[in-house]
Image 1 (tube, rainbow, N blue to C red):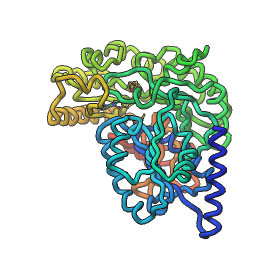
Image 2 (cartoon, helix red, strand yellow; image 1 turned 90 degrees about the vertical axis):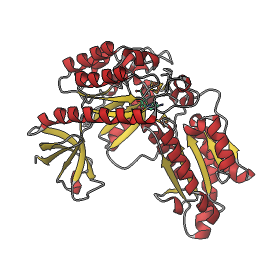
Image 3 (cartoon, rainbow, N blue to C red; image 1 turned 180 degrees about the horizontal axis):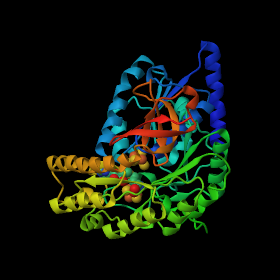
Image 4 (spheres, helix red, strand yellow; image 1 turned 45 degrees about the vertical axis):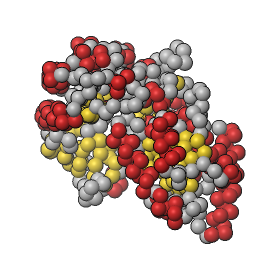
Length: 463
Ligand code: SAH
Ligand code: SF4
Ligand code: F3S
Protein backbone atom coordinates (compact mmCIF):
# COMPACT_ATOMS: atom_id res chain seq x y z
CA UNK A 1 0.00 0.00 0.00
CA UNK A 2 2.87 2.41 0.67
CA UNK A 3 3.74 2.40 -3.03
CA UNK A 4 0.09 2.92 -3.86
CA UNK A 5 -0.08 5.99 -1.62
CA UNK A 6 2.75 7.53 -3.68
CA UNK A 7 0.67 7.00 -6.83
CA UNK A 8 -2.38 8.39 -5.05
CA UNK A 9 -0.47 11.61 -4.30
CA UNK A 10 0.74 11.97 -7.89
CA UNK A 11 -2.71 11.48 -9.36
CA UNK A 12 -4.20 13.82 -6.80
CA UNK A 13 -1.78 16.58 -7.86
CA UNK A 14 -2.82 16.09 -11.46
CA UNK A 15 -6.51 16.10 -10.58
CA UNK A 16 -6.16 19.25 -8.48
CA UNK A 17 -4.33 20.98 -11.33
CA UNK A 18 -7.16 19.95 -13.64
CA UNK A 19 -9.75 21.34 -11.21
CA UNK A 20 -7.95 24.69 -11.01
CA UNK A 21 -7.67 25.00 -14.78
CA UNK A 22 -11.21 23.90 -15.54
CA UNK A 23 -13.12 25.14 -12.54
CA UNK A 24 -14.54 21.65 -11.95
CA UNK A 25 -13.21 18.55 -10.28
CA UNK A 26 -12.83 15.23 -12.02
CA UNK A 27 -15.42 12.63 -11.08
CA UNK A 28 -15.40 8.86 -10.70
CA UNK A 29 -18.27 6.41 -11.12
CA UNK A 30 -18.19 2.87 -9.71
CA UNK A 31 -20.68 0.27 -10.94
CA UNK A 32 -20.98 -2.89 -8.83
CA UNK A 33 -22.34 -6.34 -9.59
CA UNK A 34 -22.41 -9.37 -7.32
CA UNK A 35 -22.30 -10.07 -3.62
CA UNK A 36 -21.53 -8.00 -0.50
CA UNK A 37 -17.89 -8.95 -0.87
CA UNK A 38 -17.88 -7.04 -4.15
CA UNK A 39 -19.80 -4.14 -2.58
CA UNK A 40 -17.08 -4.00 0.06
CA UNK A 41 -14.40 -4.01 -2.64
CA UNK A 42 -16.19 -1.18 -4.42
CA UNK A 43 -16.13 0.85 -1.21
CA UNK A 44 -12.35 0.49 -1.36
CA UNK A 45 -12.28 1.49 -5.03
CA UNK A 46 -14.40 4.56 -4.28
CA UNK A 47 -12.24 5.31 -1.23
CA UNK A 48 -9.05 5.21 -3.29
CA UNK A 49 -10.67 7.33 -6.04
CA UNK A 50 -11.65 9.94 -3.48
CA UNK A 51 -8.13 9.94 -2.05
CA UNK A 52 -6.86 10.54 -5.60
CA UNK A 53 -8.96 13.71 -5.79
CA UNK A 54 -11.97 12.42 -7.70
CA UNK A 55 -15.50 13.24 -6.55
CA UNK A 56 -17.70 10.15 -6.55
CA UNK A 57 -20.71 10.58 -8.83
CA UNK A 58 -23.86 8.57 -9.50
CA UNK A 59 -23.90 9.04 -13.27
CA UNK A 60 -21.41 7.44 -15.70
CA UNK A 61 -21.89 10.30 -18.17
CA UNK A 62 -20.43 12.79 -15.66
CA UNK A 63 -17.31 10.73 -14.93
CA UNK A 64 -13.65 10.94 -15.99
CA UNK A 65 -13.05 7.52 -14.45
CA UNK A 66 -15.45 4.57 -14.65
CA UNK A 67 -14.75 1.34 -12.79
CA UNK A 68 -17.02 -1.67 -13.41
CA UNK A 69 -16.68 -4.25 -10.63
CA UNK A 70 -18.00 -7.52 -12.05
CA UNK A 71 -19.39 -10.84 -10.78
CA UNK A 72 -19.05 -14.31 -12.30
CA UNK A 73 -21.35 -16.41 -10.15
CA UNK A 74 -23.89 -17.08 -12.94
CA UNK A 75 -23.94 -16.50 -16.68
CA UNK A 76 -26.59 -13.83 -16.26
CA UNK A 77 -24.34 -11.76 -13.96
CA UNK A 78 -21.57 -11.79 -16.57
CA UNK A 79 -23.93 -10.89 -19.42
CA UNK A 80 -25.29 -7.94 -17.43
CA UNK A 81 -21.77 -6.61 -16.79
CA UNK A 82 -20.77 -7.02 -20.44
CA UNK A 83 -23.88 -5.20 -21.57
CA UNK A 84 -23.18 -2.28 -19.22
CA UNK A 85 -19.56 -2.11 -20.40
CA UNK A 86 -20.94 -2.07 -23.96
CA UNK A 87 -23.04 0.99 -23.15
CA UNK A 88 -19.94 2.97 -22.15
CA UNK A 89 -18.48 2.88 -25.66
CA UNK A 90 -20.32 6.04 -26.70
CA UNK A 91 -19.05 7.87 -23.57
CA UNK A 92 -15.49 7.12 -24.63
CA UNK A 93 -16.25 8.38 -28.15
CA UNK A 94 -17.48 11.66 -26.66
CA UNK A 95 -14.55 12.00 -24.24
CA UNK A 96 -11.36 10.22 -25.33
CA UNK A 97 -9.75 11.19 -21.99
CA UNK A 98 -12.27 9.07 -20.10
CA UNK A 99 -10.66 6.10 -18.33
CA UNK A 100 -12.71 2.89 -18.30
CA UNK A 101 -11.54 0.06 -16.05
CA UNK A 102 -13.06 -3.37 -15.45
CA UNK A 103 -12.28 -5.40 -12.35
CA UNK A 104 -13.72 -8.15 -10.16
CA UNK A 105 -14.53 -11.80 -10.46
CA UNK A 106 -15.51 -11.92 -14.14
CA UNK A 107 -12.14 -10.60 -15.28
CA UNK A 108 -10.23 -12.86 -12.95
CA UNK A 109 -10.90 -15.48 -15.64
CA UNK A 110 -8.58 -15.59 -18.62
CA UNK A 111 -11.27 -16.13 -21.24
CA UNK A 112 -13.12 -13.01 -20.10
CA UNK A 113 -9.91 -10.92 -20.06
CA UNK A 114 -9.37 -11.97 -23.68
CA UNK A 115 -12.93 -11.10 -24.54
CA UNK A 116 -12.45 -7.59 -23.13
CA UNK A 117 -9.12 -7.29 -24.95
CA UNK A 118 -10.59 -8.12 -28.34
CA UNK A 119 -14.22 -7.07 -28.23
CA UNK A 120 -14.14 -4.03 -25.94
CA UNK A 121 -11.14 -2.02 -27.23
CA UNK A 122 -12.20 1.14 -25.38
CA UNK A 123 -11.63 -0.51 -21.97
CA UNK A 124 -8.33 0.96 -20.70
CA UNK A 125 -7.38 -1.58 -18.11
CA UNK A 126 -8.46 -4.72 -16.37
CA UNK A 127 -7.52 -5.90 -12.88
CA UNK A 128 -8.49 -8.99 -10.92
CA UNK A 129 -9.74 -9.47 -7.38
CA UNK A 130 -6.24 -9.81 -5.94
CA UNK A 131 -5.18 -6.45 -7.40
CA UNK A 132 -7.89 -4.08 -6.13
CA UNK A 133 -5.33 -2.11 -4.12
CA UNK A 134 -3.29 -1.47 -7.28
CA UNK A 135 -5.89 0.83 -8.85
CA UNK A 136 -3.79 4.01 -8.27
CA UNK A 137 -0.75 2.45 -9.94
CA UNK A 138 -2.85 1.31 -12.90
CA UNK A 139 -4.37 4.76 -13.43
CA UNK A 140 -0.92 6.33 -13.22
CA UNK A 141 0.63 3.85 -15.65
CA UNK A 142 -2.29 4.16 -18.03
CA UNK A 143 -1.79 7.92 -18.20
CA UNK A 144 1.98 7.63 -18.51
CA UNK A 145 2.13 4.90 -21.13
CA UNK A 146 -1.19 5.55 -22.81
CA UNK A 147 -1.64 1.92 -23.70
CA UNK A 148 -4.06 -0.69 -22.47
CA UNK A 149 -3.04 -2.65 -19.38
CA UNK A 150 -3.89 -6.11 -18.10
CA UNK A 151 -2.87 -6.48 -14.53
CA UNK A 152 -1.76 -10.06 -13.92
CA UNK A 153 -3.15 -11.78 -10.84
CA UNK A 154 -0.75 -11.64 -7.94
CA UNK A 155 0.89 -14.99 -7.39
CA UNK A 156 -0.19 -14.78 -3.79
CA UNK A 157 -3.48 -13.26 -2.87
CA UNK A 158 -2.64 -10.99 0.03
CA UNK A 159 -4.58 -9.24 2.72
CA UNK A 160 -3.97 -5.57 1.95
CA UNK A 161 -4.69 -3.47 5.04
CA UNK A 162 -5.10 0.30 5.17
CA UNK A 163 -6.96 0.88 1.89
CA UNK A 164 -9.13 4.00 2.23
CA UNK A 165 -12.86 3.25 2.05
CA UNK A 166 -15.84 5.30 1.07
CA UNK A 167 -18.76 3.57 2.74
CA UNK A 168 -22.32 3.69 1.55
CA UNK A 169 -24.53 6.17 3.36
CA UNK A 170 -26.57 4.76 6.22
CA UNK A 171 -26.18 2.96 9.51
CA UNK A 172 -25.03 -0.36 8.04
CA UNK A 173 -21.46 -1.31 7.23
CA UNK A 174 -19.65 -4.36 5.90
CA UNK A 175 -16.39 -5.62 7.29
CA UNK A 176 -14.51 -8.40 5.53
CA UNK A 177 -13.01 -10.83 8.01
CA UNK A 178 -11.57 -13.17 5.41
CA UNK A 179 -11.13 -13.45 1.68
CA UNK A 180 -11.23 -16.36 -0.75
CA UNK A 181 -12.66 -19.85 -0.47
CA UNK A 182 -11.13 -23.33 -0.15
CA UNK A 183 -14.30 -25.37 -0.53
CA UNK A 184 -14.53 -25.99 -4.27
CA UNK A 185 -18.22 -26.82 -4.38
CA UNK A 186 -18.35 -28.42 -7.80
CA UNK A 187 -20.65 -25.79 -9.38
CA UNK A 188 -18.94 -22.69 -8.03
CA UNK A 189 -16.49 -20.28 -9.64
CA UNK A 190 -15.61 -18.38 -6.44
CA UNK A 191 -12.53 -20.44 -5.40
CA UNK A 192 -11.06 -19.84 -8.87
CA UNK A 193 -11.64 -16.10 -8.91
CA UNK A 194 -11.08 -15.25 -5.25
CA UNK A 195 -8.14 -17.50 -4.46
CA UNK A 196 -7.43 -19.36 -1.22
CA UNK A 197 -8.74 -18.40 2.19
CA UNK A 198 -6.88 -15.62 3.98
CA UNK A 199 -8.10 -14.31 7.33
CA UNK A 200 -7.52 -10.85 8.71
CA UNK A 201 -6.21 -10.75 12.24
CA UNK A 202 -8.61 -10.44 15.17
CA UNK A 203 -6.97 -7.10 16.04
CA UNK A 204 -7.45 -5.62 12.55
CA UNK A 205 -11.13 -6.63 12.52
CA UNK A 206 -11.68 -5.39 16.07
CA UNK A 207 -10.12 -1.99 15.32
CA UNK A 208 -12.28 -1.53 12.22
CA UNK A 209 -15.52 -2.58 13.91
CA UNK A 210 -14.82 -0.41 16.95
CA UNK A 211 -14.16 2.62 14.80
CA UNK A 212 -17.40 2.07 12.88
CA UNK A 213 -19.43 1.77 16.06
CA UNK A 214 -17.82 4.93 17.43
CA UNK A 215 -18.77 6.69 14.20
CA UNK A 216 -22.39 5.69 14.82
CA UNK A 217 -22.86 2.64 12.61
CA UNK A 218 -25.56 0.43 14.07
CA UNK A 219 -25.37 -2.76 12.05
CA UNK A 220 -22.10 -4.41 11.12
CA UNK A 221 -22.05 -7.44 8.82
CA UNK A 222 -18.91 -9.54 8.95
CA UNK A 223 -18.13 -10.94 5.53
CA UNK A 224 -16.46 -14.05 4.20
CA UNK A 225 -17.40 -16.85 1.78
CA UNK A 226 -17.26 -19.24 4.69
CA UNK A 227 -16.76 -17.35 7.92
CA UNK A 228 -16.84 -20.63 9.84
CA UNK A 229 -13.36 -21.48 8.64
CA UNK A 230 -12.02 -18.10 9.82
CA UNK A 231 -8.49 -18.33 11.16
CA UNK A 232 -7.77 -21.88 10.02
CA UNK A 233 -5.72 -20.77 7.01
CA UNK A 234 -3.51 -18.57 9.15
CA UNK A 235 -3.11 -20.94 12.06
CA UNK A 236 -4.66 -18.51 14.54
CA UNK A 237 -5.41 -19.96 17.95
CA UNK A 238 -8.90 -18.42 17.81
CA UNK A 239 -11.81 -19.31 15.58
CA UNK A 240 -14.85 -17.43 14.29
CA UNK A 241 -16.84 -17.95 17.49
CA UNK A 242 -13.92 -16.47 19.45
CA UNK A 243 -13.77 -13.56 17.01
CA UNK A 244 -17.43 -12.61 17.44
CA UNK A 245 -17.27 -13.08 21.20
CA UNK A 246 -14.32 -10.66 21.19
CA UNK A 247 -16.14 -8.11 18.98
CA UNK A 248 -19.20 -8.41 21.20
CA UNK A 249 -17.20 -6.85 24.05
CA UNK A 250 -17.22 -3.50 22.20
CA UNK A 251 -19.56 -1.16 24.05
CA UNK A 252 -22.46 0.49 22.27
CA UNK A 253 -25.91 0.14 20.78
CA UNK A 254 -25.33 -1.96 17.67
CA UNK A 255 -25.93 -5.34 16.05
CA UNK A 256 -23.48 -7.83 14.55
CA UNK A 257 -24.46 -9.97 11.55
CA UNK A 258 -22.27 -12.32 9.55
CA UNK A 259 -22.37 -14.19 6.29
CA UNK A 260 -21.92 -16.71 4.83
CA UNK A 261 -21.71 -19.86 6.90
CA UNK A 262 -20.89 -23.20 5.34
CA UNK A 263 -22.97 -25.84 7.17
CA UNK A 264 -20.12 -28.34 7.34
CA UNK A 265 -18.13 -25.94 9.54
CA UNK A 266 -20.94 -24.42 11.63
CA UNK A 267 -20.14 -25.42 15.21
CA UNK A 268 -22.19 -25.72 18.37
CA UNK A 269 -19.69 -23.34 19.92
CA UNK A 270 -20.69 -20.70 17.34
CA UNK A 271 -24.39 -21.16 18.10
CA UNK A 272 -23.72 -21.01 21.86
CA UNK A 273 -21.69 -17.83 21.40
CA UNK A 274 -24.55 -16.26 19.44
CA UNK A 275 -27.10 -17.29 22.05
CA UNK A 276 -25.01 -15.82 24.87
CA UNK A 277 -23.94 -12.70 22.96
CA UNK A 278 -25.14 -9.21 23.69
CA UNK A 279 -24.99 -7.67 20.22
CA UNK A 280 -24.96 -10.73 17.96
CA UNK A 281 -28.10 -10.92 15.83
CA UNK A 282 -30.08 -14.13 16.11
CA UNK A 283 -29.96 -14.57 12.38
CA UNK A 284 -28.32 -17.52 10.69
CA UNK A 285 -27.85 -17.66 6.93
CA UNK A 286 -27.01 -21.29 6.30
CA UNK A 287 -27.06 -22.27 2.62
CA UNK A 288 -28.44 -25.79 2.17
CA UNK A 289 -28.35 -25.84 -1.68
CA UNK A 290 -30.29 -29.12 -1.98
CA UNK A 291 -32.26 -31.57 0.15
CA UNK A 292 -31.01 -34.61 -1.76
CA UNK A 293 -28.00 -36.45 -0.39
CA UNK A 294 -26.83 -37.63 -3.80
CA UNK A 295 -26.99 -34.08 -5.21
CA UNK A 296 -25.21 -32.72 -2.13
CA UNK A 297 -22.50 -35.29 -2.69
CA UNK A 298 -22.10 -34.37 -6.37
CA UNK A 299 -21.98 -30.73 -5.32
CA UNK A 300 -19.08 -31.56 -2.98
CA UNK A 301 -20.88 -29.89 -0.09
CA UNK A 302 -19.61 -32.48 2.41
CA UNK A 303 -22.75 -32.81 4.55
CA UNK A 304 -25.95 -34.83 4.34
CA UNK A 305 -29.43 -33.45 4.78
CA UNK A 306 -29.63 -35.04 8.25
CA UNK A 307 -26.35 -33.48 9.32
CA UNK A 308 -27.65 -30.15 8.04
CA UNK A 309 -30.91 -30.49 9.97
CA UNK A 310 -29.06 -31.33 13.17
CA UNK A 311 -27.46 -27.89 13.00
CA UNK A 312 -30.78 -26.17 12.27
CA UNK A 313 -32.41 -27.98 15.19
CA UNK A 314 -29.57 -26.98 17.49
CA UNK A 315 -29.88 -23.32 16.44
CA UNK A 316 -33.63 -23.41 17.18
CA UNK A 317 -33.07 -25.16 20.50
CA UNK A 318 -30.58 -22.52 21.68
CA UNK A 319 -32.29 -19.54 20.06
CA UNK A 320 -36.01 -20.13 19.59
CA UNK A 321 -36.32 -16.63 18.12
CA UNK A 322 -33.62 -17.22 15.48
CA UNK A 323 -34.36 -16.32 11.88
CA UNK A 324 -32.84 -18.94 9.59
CA UNK A 325 -32.39 -18.27 5.89
CA UNK A 326 -30.81 -20.33 3.15
CA UNK A 327 -29.64 -20.57 -0.46
CA UNK A 328 -31.23 -23.22 -2.65
CA UNK A 329 -30.22 -24.21 -6.16
CA UNK A 330 -32.34 -26.13 -8.65
CA UNK A 331 -31.28 -27.90 -11.84
CA UNK A 332 -27.85 -29.11 -10.77
CA UNK A 333 -26.60 -31.65 -13.37
CA UNK A 334 -28.20 -35.05 -12.80
CA UNK A 335 -30.89 -33.70 -10.42
CA UNK A 336 -33.82 -36.11 -10.84
CA UNK A 337 -37.47 -35.35 -10.17
CA UNK A 338 -37.05 -37.33 -6.96
CA UNK A 339 -33.98 -35.31 -5.91
CA UNK A 340 -35.91 -32.13 -6.51
CA UNK A 341 -38.84 -33.38 -4.45
CA UNK A 342 -36.37 -34.10 -1.64
CA UNK A 343 -35.50 -30.41 -1.75
CA UNK A 344 -39.18 -29.43 -1.47
CA UNK A 345 -39.56 -31.84 1.44
CA UNK A 346 -36.45 -30.36 3.04
CA UNK A 347 -37.97 -26.88 2.83
CA UNK A 348 -41.08 -28.09 4.65
CA UNK A 349 -38.92 -29.70 7.32
CA UNK A 350 -36.44 -26.83 7.79
CA UNK A 351 -39.02 -24.03 7.62
CA UNK A 352 -36.69 -21.24 6.59
CA UNK A 353 -37.91 -17.70 7.05
CA UNK A 354 -36.64 -16.87 3.59
CA UNK A 355 -34.49 -18.36 0.87
CA UNK A 356 -32.41 -17.05 -1.99
CA UNK A 357 -33.16 -19.37 -4.88
CA UNK A 358 -31.03 -19.95 -7.94
CA UNK A 359 -31.18 -21.83 -11.21
CA UNK A 360 -27.94 -23.72 -11.76
CA UNK A 361 -25.71 -22.00 -14.31
CA UNK A 362 -22.70 -23.91 -15.71
CA UNK A 363 -19.44 -22.09 -15.00
CA UNK A 364 -16.48 -22.66 -17.29
CA UNK A 365 -13.64 -24.45 -15.51
CA UNK A 366 -15.77 -25.99 -12.72
CA UNK A 367 -16.27 -29.78 -12.50
CA UNK A 368 -20.08 -29.58 -12.62
CA UNK A 369 -20.00 -27.81 -15.97
CA UNK A 370 -18.34 -30.94 -17.42
CA UNK A 371 -21.03 -33.31 -16.15
CA UNK A 372 -22.99 -34.89 -18.95
CA UNK A 373 -26.48 -34.85 -17.59
CA UNK A 374 -27.20 -31.10 -17.76
CA UNK A 375 -30.86 -30.35 -17.04
CA UNK A 376 -32.85 -28.71 -19.87
CA UNK A 377 -33.76 -25.04 -19.33
CA UNK A 378 -37.52 -25.66 -19.33
CA UNK A 379 -37.20 -28.31 -16.58
CA UNK A 380 -34.99 -25.99 -14.53
CA UNK A 381 -37.48 -23.11 -14.80
CA UNK A 382 -40.46 -25.32 -13.94
CA UNK A 383 -38.64 -26.57 -10.82
CA UNK A 384 -37.68 -23.03 -9.92
CA UNK A 385 -41.34 -21.96 -10.00
CA UNK A 386 -42.38 -24.88 -7.79
CA UNK A 387 -39.54 -24.09 -5.38
CA UNK A 388 -40.72 -20.48 -5.06
CA UNK A 389 -44.35 -21.48 -4.56
CA UNK A 390 -43.42 -23.94 -1.80
CA UNK A 391 -41.15 -21.50 0.00
CA UNK A 392 -43.48 -18.51 -0.36
CA UNK A 393 -46.18 -20.37 1.53
CA UNK A 394 -43.68 -21.21 4.28
CA UNK A 395 -42.31 -17.64 4.47
CA UNK A 396 -45.85 -16.35 4.93
CA UNK A 397 -46.50 -18.90 7.69
CA UNK A 398 -43.24 -17.89 9.39
CA UNK A 399 -44.12 -14.18 9.22
CA UNK A 400 -47.77 -14.39 10.32
CA UNK A 401 -47.09 -14.96 14.05
CA UNK A 402 -45.29 -11.59 14.10
CA UNK A 403 -48.64 -9.80 13.67
CA UNK A 404 -49.40 -7.92 16.87
CA UNK A 405 -45.83 -8.26 18.16
CA UNK A 406 -43.55 -5.31 18.81
CA UNK A 407 -40.06 -5.79 17.43
CA UNK A 408 -36.85 -3.83 17.16
CA UNK A 409 -36.18 -2.42 13.72
CA UNK A 410 -33.21 -0.48 12.37
CA UNK A 411 -34.66 2.34 10.27
CA UNK A 412 -33.05 2.85 6.84
CA UNK A 413 -35.04 5.96 5.95
CA UNK A 414 -37.62 6.59 3.27
CA UNK A 415 -38.43 3.61 1.10
CA UNK A 416 -36.82 3.72 -2.34
CA UNK A 417 -40.06 2.82 -4.11
CA UNK A 418 -42.45 4.94 -2.08
CA UNK A 419 -40.98 7.95 -0.31
CA UNK A 420 -44.07 8.46 1.85
CA UNK A 421 -43.26 5.35 3.91
CA UNK A 422 -40.13 4.37 5.82
CA UNK A 423 -38.37 1.04 5.72
CA UNK A 424 -36.11 -0.82 8.06
CA UNK A 425 -34.96 -4.31 8.94
CA UNK A 426 -35.46 -6.55 11.91
CA UNK A 427 -32.68 -8.39 13.68
CA UNK A 428 -33.45 -11.32 11.35
CA UNK A 429 -33.13 -9.00 8.35
CA UNK A 430 -36.86 -8.96 7.52
CA UNK A 431 -37.96 -5.80 5.79
CA UNK A 432 -40.54 -3.66 7.62
CA UNK A 433 -42.52 -0.67 6.31
CA UNK A 434 -43.97 1.95 8.63
CA UNK A 435 -44.86 5.64 8.90
CA UNK A 436 -41.81 7.43 10.20
CA UNK A 437 -40.00 10.71 10.36
CA UNK A 438 -36.68 11.65 8.81
CA UNK A 439 -35.15 11.93 12.26
CA UNK A 440 -35.81 8.18 12.74
CA UNK A 441 -33.33 7.26 10.01
CA UNK A 442 -30.36 5.30 11.32
CA UNK A 443 -32.05 4.61 14.67
CA UNK A 444 -33.38 1.49 16.33
CA UNK A 445 -37.15 1.74 16.69
CA UNK A 446 -39.82 -0.41 18.26
CA UNK A 447 -42.42 -1.25 15.66
CA UNK A 448 -45.70 -3.07 16.25
CA UNK A 449 -46.41 -5.33 13.30
CA UNK A 450 -49.94 -4.89 11.98
CA UNK A 451 -49.71 -7.01 8.87
CA UNK A 452 -47.29 -9.73 7.81
CA UNK A 453 -46.85 -10.67 4.16
CA UNK A 454 -44.63 -13.19 2.38
CA UNK A 455 -41.82 -10.72 1.72
CA UNK A 456 -42.48 -7.83 4.10
CA UNK A 457 -43.95 -6.70 7.40
CA UNK A 458 -46.04 -3.55 7.89
CA UNK A 459 -46.37 -1.76 11.21
CA UNK A 460 -46.49 1.32 13.40
CA UNK A 461 -43.75 2.85 15.54
CA UNK A 462 -44.27 2.62 19.28
CA UNK A 463 -43.19 5.97 20.74
N1 SAH B 1 -19.99 -18.95 0.02
C1 SAH B 1 -21.39 -19.00 0.04
C2 SAH B 1 -22.07 -18.80 -1.30
C3 SAH B 1 -21.66 -17.70 -2.19
S1 SAH B 1 -22.43 -17.74 -3.74
C4 SAH B 1 -21.82 -20.38 0.55
O1 SAH B 1 -21.19 -21.35 0.28
O2 SAH B 1 -22.84 -20.42 1.15
C5 SAH B 1 -24.12 -17.53 -3.30
C6 SAH B 1 -25.01 -18.60 -3.84
O3 SAH B 1 -24.99 -18.60 -5.25
C7 SAH B 1 -24.64 -20.01 -3.47
O4 SAH B 1 -25.04 -20.37 -2.19
C8 SAH B 1 -25.33 -20.83 -4.53
O5 SAH B 1 -26.64 -21.18 -4.14
C9 SAH B 1 -25.40 -19.86 -5.70
N2 SAH B 1 -24.51 -20.30 -6.78
C10 SAH B 1 -23.18 -20.48 -6.73
N3 SAH B 1 -22.72 -20.94 -7.93
C11 SAH B 1 -23.81 -21.06 -8.73
C12 SAH B 1 -24.00 -21.51 -10.07
N4 SAH B 1 -22.99 -21.95 -10.81
N5 SAH B 1 -25.26 -21.50 -10.57
C13 SAH B 1 -26.31 -21.08 -9.82
N6 SAH B 1 -26.18 -20.65 -8.56
C14 SAH B 1 -24.94 -20.64 -8.00
FE1 SF4 C 1 -18.71 -21.32 -3.67
FE2 SF4 C 1 -18.91 -23.37 -2.04
FE3 SF4 C 1 -17.03 -21.53 -1.64
FE4 SF4 C 1 -19.58 -20.95 -1.20
S1 SF4 C 1 -18.37 -22.45 -0.10
S2 SF4 C 1 -18.08 -19.70 -2.29
S3 SF4 C 1 -20.62 -22.09 -2.79
S4 SF4 C 1 -17.15 -22.93 -3.37
FE1 F3S D 1 -19.95 -12.80 -7.68
FE2 F3S D 1 -17.44 -12.78 -7.02
FE3 F3S D 1 -19.29 -12.39 -5.19
S1 F3S D 1 -18.40 -14.20 -8.39
S2 F3S D 1 -21.03 -13.53 -5.96
S3 F3S D 1 -18.88 -11.07 -6.88
S4 F3S D 1 -17.36 -13.44 -4.92
